[in-house]
Length: 359
Image 1 (cartoon, helix red, strand yellow):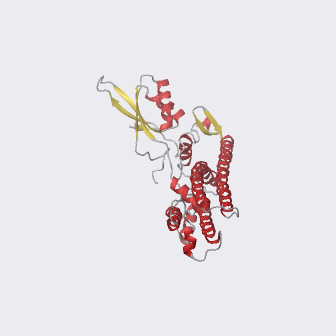
Image 2 (tube, rainbow, N blue to C red; image 1 turned 30 degrees about the horizontal axis):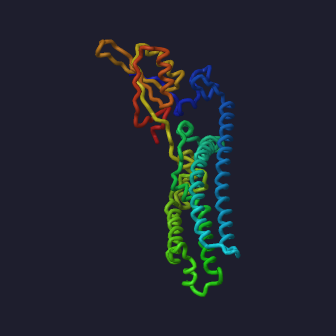
Image 3 (spheres, rainbow, N blue to C red; image 1 turned 180 degrees about the vertical axis):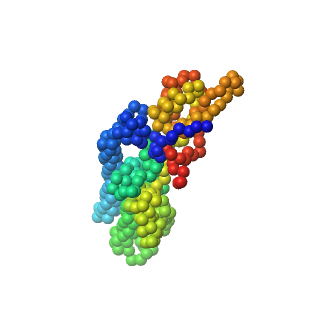
């Protein structure tokens, strides 16, 4: 069994080409040839585009919060109106605020899609330029490519709704509670005792005590949601502690970052689906060289024998990702139309060109 020299430990399509005449290129894939200035320029423009898109969704978050603040002010104004406003306006506004919170949580999840990409480029592309010998994580380009090919929400709906509630809507709900009790106590005349105030809370035949318990219970449930979601910290766009608690742990983590022993930002790598291709061919050398040159993946040659024909054949084994399968089939078909190709999924691929074996 012979093994050709595999590529450096970088994702396919983002590495220096091995040929001398192409050594000036840092990115070569499927006919593209980008030099260092071209690659950096493309990344900078892409970074600016993602920042712009994140800013748009951030503004949409502020818009929803403004709706909640304005509607709260309007409901309190109507409830305290001398013309005979009713305290039930505040209760209805609490339901309206809940709808705004649901909309804002949904927008926050979309905002995090772009924010996660920005943080990925900040920590593993730009920071790597500024703090030698600190380098990018081996899977950063793969994670970014996977996110572009198959966008996904980085955070759950519970984290989004809990975070927006704690940041903004908790104070709005508290204001509604205080305004509601103040309305019951002061209008139409200051109440003489607590029972008188509760009697004014009745709505549509429901006793005041029942209405008060329902309103306070509703707000208590939201406080419980905000409390139970505190531990969800997958949001990349927030300034959150990314290290273990304690001063000593923080300094140790910073020291590891400077020496390149740990990642600067604790994130979950998301790689493209990894596969293993077997190519049974009688043109071992031309097919193997074509895959090495165009696909930029290591190829291993095995010896095989067809039991039906009794003839010896070469079996080329190549690990690749799901987005490279189409390119592999096109290359093999071009060089040997009679080749037999088997592509099978694998649990994990470790080594040069994929995730380092030491991790």
